Amino acid sequence: GQQLNQSPQSMFIQEGEDVSMNCTSSSIFNTWLWYKQDPGEGPVLLIALYKAGELTSNGRLTAQFGITRKDSFLNISASIPSDVGIYFCAGGSGNTGKLIFGQGTTLQVKP
Amino acid sequence: NAGVTQTPKFRILKIGQSMTLQCTQDMNHNYMYWYRQDPGMGLKLIYYSVGAGITDKGEVPNGYNVSRSTTEDFPLRLELAAPSQTSVYFCASSHRDRSLYYGYTFGSGTRLTVV
Figure 1 (cartoon, chains in turn orange, purple):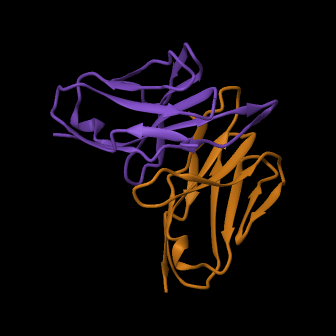
Figure 2: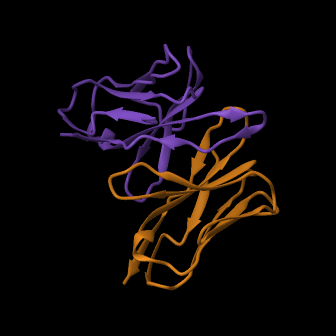
């Protein structure tokens, strides 16, 4: 079946640093989404991308939909302690709205 | 707007017991999903539904059943609980606007332990 490879698996950074994570797949997706999960909560949508090559920002977050439609990246600029959590990429295709999720990137920020 | 509500938040089951995880949404979304989350494994799709009366298997359906009698509710049933079903379960819903599928809205999860 379809799989997403998300990297890195975990990151431990200093407050103020920029962060970059990415997802790759052997399959083509029509939609790429990025979610953040806080401890004990469900994932929350950060950014949605619907077109190949699309670059979208949400505050300090920037994400891109790869030209090949097989990859996406998420950048976080000037990280702050509340950025701590697990970040998931997700790809969607077909008519059912189903999403395939990456394994997640755990981000820790040292004040 | 409550969004997606899941109950219970926590549950401990004995091997062989049954239970139903409840999920309800008040956003009039057609699409609903059940995922399980295991440490380091991301989210795996168990079952999904594209509308009332329609359900289909996801990636890991064995040991589970679902029903969708109304747009709002999408309960997940575990019939004979096994330790391998220890996990955190998330329900989600989404909608479609022409050709765009919008991202899921997730519930806050049910943490299930089978002992």
